[in-house]
Image 1 (cartoon, rainbow over the protein chains, first blue to last red):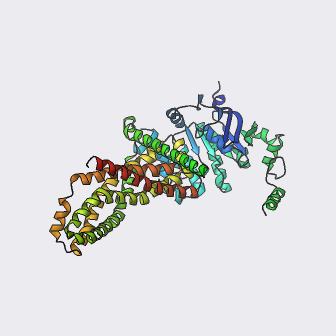
Image 2: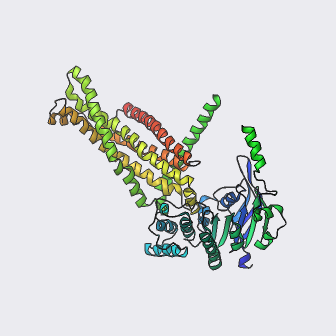
Image 3: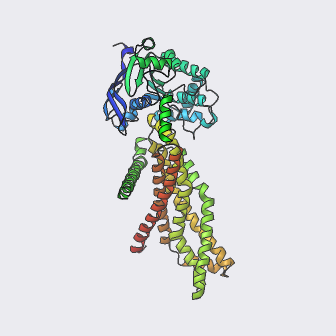
Length: 268
Length: 262
């Protein structure tokens, strides 16, 4: 089997509900080694839940999730932790430990999971920070950095252990267009050079078409379209077309001014 | 009404179950962890010891020294009537070492450090830092709860012993300065009826209170839900639950010591 066609993550009929509300509805999906797989969809469509299901933070109500051929459902904590050493995760709000400096944040996974000497770990931490353009900020605390800088440090932490898979939750949200484009370039670069499998959650259509190898559109917990950026761009699905064009009129259920007026009439 | 009582009972049961589970988790990492070369980081333990111990000395001093003074004055009021004012010294030292110093120190530390631990862990929880640790395959109990548990377990007895000393000092100031008891006589009477068991029963209580404060604060912090309001709730709950459990544990331990002639 071609390495590029090796399935890294596979979801089989995954269903997840919260308080009786269906969040992911019977999702089946294969993500291949080295590809950048982008999941797009409206707010509340279940994108972040899908990411958390894949990284084992939450368990589905039914269905199976295979990571590198191993089913993580019902896996023991030790086995899951062992698998997680090959993950990296970039959180939407960075989730850096604010009591540690930038360098200590990068050193944390290295100290926990390797037996390298302190000097080597320091070199690796500085190298990863340079890779994301954050060299020279080693001794800053996360609170002293801007949102964009924190995201880049989070990315440096995510690649500290040279993971095979990186999950990105809204990597460019809240960033200015230039830093956003630089982050996109970095994700693409990591995938091309290090053959990292990347799963990216985003609303940003520019990012989608710039970095994705394949794109999935999630709507109301359902995977309504999966394809290459070109296929998605030329999709005949009305939901996908409305989402790409960013039009307020269409089948995607948004609170229209009329509905808001009805709400106010009911309340007052 | 019945529904509210039932809901509260279920919540309380879940909380106690969660605290017991956390205790076993902490116990596992303290006892088994070192054999798997996975322990809490030493620097984390020492920084927590500094925070819960060294940085609480001033407030423990303020509380226990004034308590010693108040106790001396209240005892003097009664003992003057009996013509045995000299025994103020013994009453102050014994009641402080057996009861007041461990309990007051624990309440002070629960209010100061327990609340800070719950707020810190709660903020980490709502800002996804705990989840980030889990995704990095770092156990939050080992990484966050164990250093705080060990710090409180060892520093609360130390603070209690300091509290004993500060309280006796407070009593001494009133006894010698205001009640006219001579310096030597006050000290001699203070230690005449104070036995070693009075000190170590207080220290045993302090160990138990340290465990309670650490487990409650870590449990509430690690189970925070929601945003800023959730952190506020977790902090308040940690202090209230610690206070109640400390008093309850004090009652149980005092009964055990009393009925077994300790």
